[in-house]
Image (cartoon, rainbow, N blue to C red; front, side, top):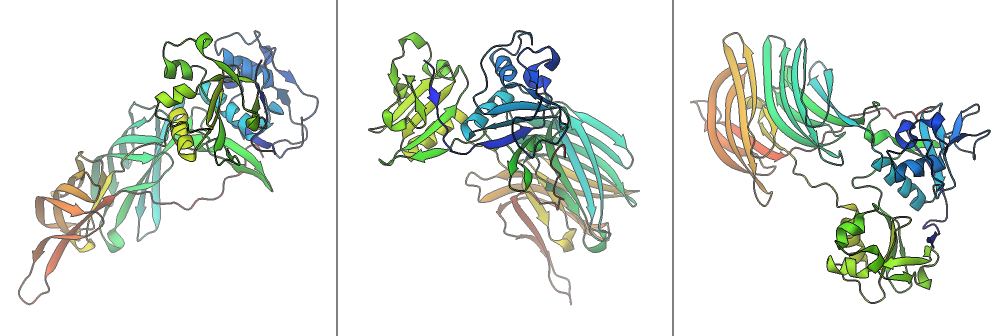
Length: 468
């Protein structure tokens, strides 16, 4: 008997995804698990009078069970929430259900994933004029894209991690700014959607800064961070999917344990347990104390988690329902944290690039690069050449950054000399790397500063709700 599930939260929520309907149902017109509705299934800010709405609660589950099946071969299982429809006007899949229902549907949508691309945006900001030149270029993860469009020559090579949260990018750029032809070569890493400064030069009216933003998108052009929306008081709000997916809600028991339900992949326990057959796993009744959340028979998997280092203190419970692919866990807060990491994965692990800069009087140079990679910024005008080159290496304890450097001391776009050496810099602390004192003048100091290259926010207008 399949488990009868009650909501972890008492109120339902209404959520919409801006995705093509055929990605979750196949050919809608031929799918026997979908049918057009005469009226909306309920009142919602996602709907407007005259909308063309389709019930797809069975079609989605059939496609989730077998993405390669013909649309006509619809199953009979319905999604567990209140309703699930396709709104042809807004181009959105809209659903209403408990948090657990929505989490399950989110997992299905991610499993039936659409192709993704990465948009690389570059902005050249001139401080004095207050102007910005911006360009963007789209490429698939792991592939290169080039653009030659005056005054820009660009080659980008973005590679996203499996969740498309983090983007590694190699950049080769050339652009003209006044009489100077600039060339930049570097490699950087950033969270998708985050804007970071990757180069700068000059001071006062001659200063410029270059910013980089990688944006992961579905091939429909919708940014991954803007696909999901939620109904809230006053209308619709964007509801991005957090790294690693939505975390389950937890409920405290009078005994001090925490209870949570996880939606998991169908084969996760085959992977965890290995060769042990499902028939050999003992089925037990969910304890009465958890009946409000889950009832019925489940596979006892406490031993599975114990072998993975989860303590399972007295009173703990772990059960798996293979029919709904849900796991119920009752355990300590620490055990829940470990289970969440095991079943859902932790947040993305990455090291930001290093940012290395000089003082303004020495040229106002700045450049970002990954640890161990060389980055070069070169300016040319006729016979003149200006250079800033770094190769940073982050220390083991992240409190210092070693830098091999070579750069010109610049005054009015003229080189007054060149420094080349290696230094170890304490993070965020300017270090004097050279001095010069002329008779009758103050001592001139050249400083170098290194720190992690963190995001720089950009003022953005609020985005309108989709399909409104």
